[in-house]
Structure formats: C-alpha cells, structure tokens
Image (cartoon, rainbow, N blue to C red):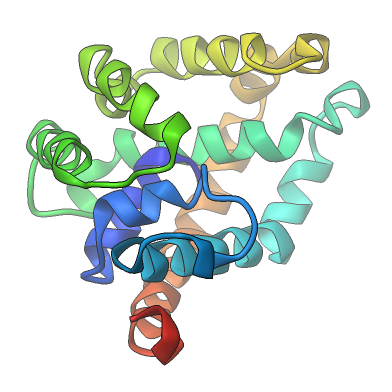
Length: 197
C-alpha cells in the first residue's frame, strides 16, 4: 500500500493519519521516534508485512513481466492506491478531495515528523498527490516520479504498459484484499503493544 491507502487505513482504524504515513519514512527501532508517532509507525509496518506476504498480492506480482520483478511490489502498491482513489466513494463517507484536505492538514499540524516526510509534505499538498491517484494518467505520472527518485530507474522500464495490461487483475486483487486489510487494521489498532500507546 502507498500513501493514500495508509492514510485511509489510519482513518479506518481511528489512529493518527500523519503517524501512519510517517511509517514510510521511519527506519529502525520504533522507540527512537516520538511517542505520538509510535502507534502509527507500528501499524504501518503491520499493514506492509501483511500486504507483502499475502497470497493475493504475491500472485499479482508474479503476473508482471520478468523484467519488472524488482519493481513489481512497488508498482502494485501504487496501483492499489489508484484503485482506492478510483472507487473512493465505496470506501469512505467523505469525498476524496475532503479527505485529502484533512490528510494534508494533519501532516502540517504534526510535530517531529521524520525529516524526509517533513521536507516532502508541502509538495504532497501543492501537487495534490492523493487526488492525482484517481486517474490512469495520475498513476502513470506517479510511477514515473517514483522511478526518478531511485538509483536504478531502469527497473521500472515498461511499468505503465504493464499496469494497463493487468488492469482487471489488479482490480480483482484489490477488491478482494483491501476489505480484509481494513478489518485487520481495526484489529491491530486495538491490539497495539502498550509501549507504543
């Protein structure tokens, strides 16, 4: 799952939006981070672990061309955010625009974010990353943007063509897996280790 899904799952589990997003930028021991971020980072890691190990996502990743083996898990995360944005009204009572505004405000208001997220947050808002996921064009732009930020962008060669070709398979996997992940996130929020609360 990428930014939009992690924020949605934070809202779904009634935990901190900013802290859950911080999980993408928080490395190492959770104890090294401020108390108000710890539950979100822990929850983010549970979500990533289940997503990476689930048969549905593993089967979907296996459908990508061999040349995209290294990039496919990242591409699937981005494509799942696209599916969530595309069918947003089925998963949340607010519009995507309203939710995105709330998420941007939560990031702005949160103190002691990991440095990389703190630097990126103004751009996330100004370029409206969360709403951009809704269109196929936005998904393609996000894939290109991610490719530019890594040391070996060539591992994403052919990624946009692959997501277009696998559109139905991605939607089936998302629609099957995501409701499970929503249920798990609520359970994990209740079962967060006491030291992270």
